[in-house]
Length: 307
Image (cartoon, rainbow, N blue to C red):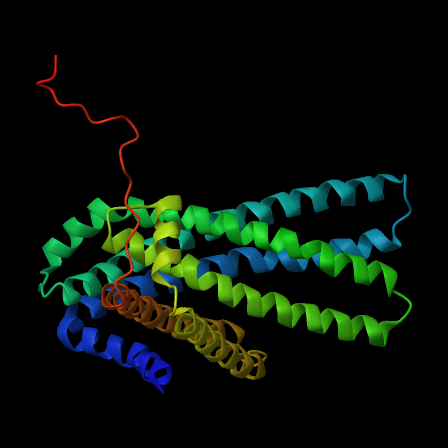
């Protein structure tokens, strides 16, 4: 019952933060959604023509004869299209990453001021964010590397059954579905610490591996709430995509833009919920009396008055 109450508090907490800092959150959300929407429109209008052109050239390549000038010309054109497409993807991903860092830092800073009993002005918020954004940035880099390592680690378990059970499609499908559920569940479990580490980087003067270590200590006894929080947000995003997939054939750009806005709002709520989750974990640490890790000097401390 206490765990359920704690999870419900995670969902109520963001509403309390919004009630006290509605103006700052509205400004942040507006900037975020405008930047996110513009980048999505530019990405879609830039990438889609290359995708269509690439698909047409691949079909033409199948019917062309190897060794002919036409075949060679198609290969060169396909290579150029892939290079341009990867360039567009990289620019879009990097831009979205920095926008996400900006929003995360801003929202978590607002939540931090709420729990500290401070009312930040817009100018104070900008100054605070500009002085702290590097910490969550570095931590996010570590989180991305851990996520990439996790994906690579699970790649082999997916590859081996695909090669062994290639001639048994029903068994292969069953095994792959089981592995996919296991992969997603364990990822949601691990990402509790990863996401909390970004919050720790804003609330505390730490970053990187140190922030991940602090998050791992804080989450002890509370990981279930974070896991349920991740599951809830995944379900909400899944519903947004499922509804959008039914409407997108008629209005792909408009539906895609609406999806981007809704997912952006869900992300903002998630940042606030994880800030509430950090506060819960911090209070739980104080109540339970667990000691926090502190770096201690390795060199011996000597009295300066000794000869």
